[in-house]
Amino acid sequence: RGRRARVGTRAVVAAAPTLFCIDRDGVINVDVGAPGVIDVRDFVLLPRAAMAVKMLNDAGVRCCVVTNQTCVGKALATESYVRDVIHGEMRDALAREGRGAKVDGVIYAVRTREQAPACTRRKPAPGMVLEALETFDETDAARVVFVGDTVTDMQAAARAGGVRRALVCTGYGEVMGEALRKANVSLPTTLTCAADVPLGTMMIPDECFPVDVFEDLFHAVTCILNETP
Image 1 (cartoon, rainbow, N blue to C red):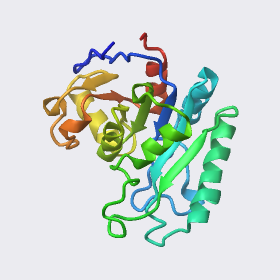
Image 2 (cartoon, rainbow, N blue to C red):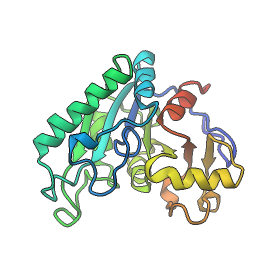
Image 3 (cartoon, rainbow, N blue to C red):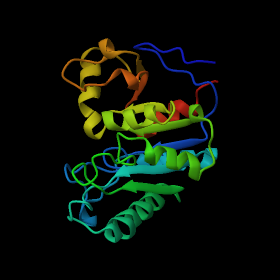
């Protein structure tokens, strides 16, 4: 069954999700701005992020972090530092704050646009999302949700065969949340076309719609897991 989606309503998915792909900066942890976290001391989980991951764990839904980490390509941090130290802290913090919460995988891209203009992995390209589907043996994109805070997240999801797009109002998504609140639009809501997007927020291309909008990762997970197919 298809989604019934328009501004002010909640989308309904055709089947229960089996995999969440989750952006990192601005969704799981506080976004410190470009070029991202390059010092583990700056890695701080967003409120409720760990409990969101724990909720997925308890529901038997797999979750994979999918993130651009071009700080490596810019030589601001080594790949081993990002992989072992920063992502090690992410895993430890999730477990500490989320009563044993854990992500099932971390997929990242390190090359910059200048280094690899035609890169098929770096978002907005769908390569990492497709890699997640392959890693977790998921053949039905309709059962996969991508939670992100940027347009490039939504593009990567759309280009991966129709993975569901969930935009959160944290990180770069804060501007969307503020605009929707000023327009008296309650969350969750669904943007179905460019006319639904508040002016001065995000330039969301047609390929991304529909886009479901939530307060944060915890709100997205709670709402989506409680939807009735």
